[in-house]
Image (cartoon, rainbow, N blue to C red; front, top):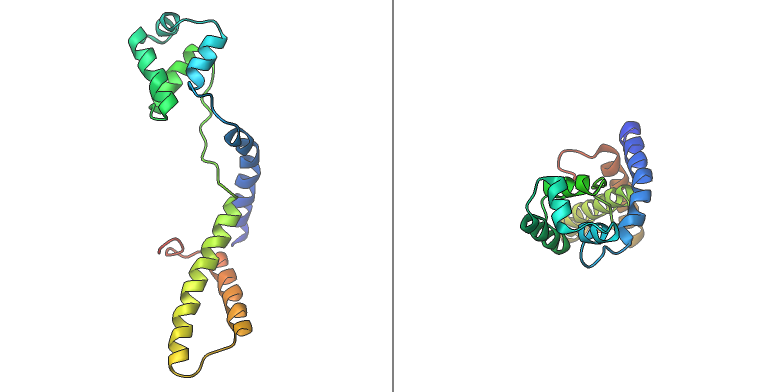
Length: 153
């Protein structure tokens, strides 16, 4: 990867480490809105009044949040009524760097396999060690250049 791209990936990975701790903690079964509202001792009617929603709207939103289908704008509105902020993030399962490396290795594997099959048919095949070196070198090149087709299948 280029210096700036690599720096950007490292900075994002560092930032997302803190967020990952939240991601690995389970959400309350009833959802955050209902759990926080009840912890504050606030009724649905009171939250409805604070958000300009109806009591039925709050009940519906709490259910949709627990199912994972709430709209972000609705969640922000309810959070504001609870004096909370919505923390929204995409958290990589491993790291951005690891995702890039895995894609480069996968793409290199496909490219080397295509060439190897062709060379084997022409009795010009190479050994496993040489093939592994080609894979590693090609993956490094792909990772460094990351052309427009890097994420194409």
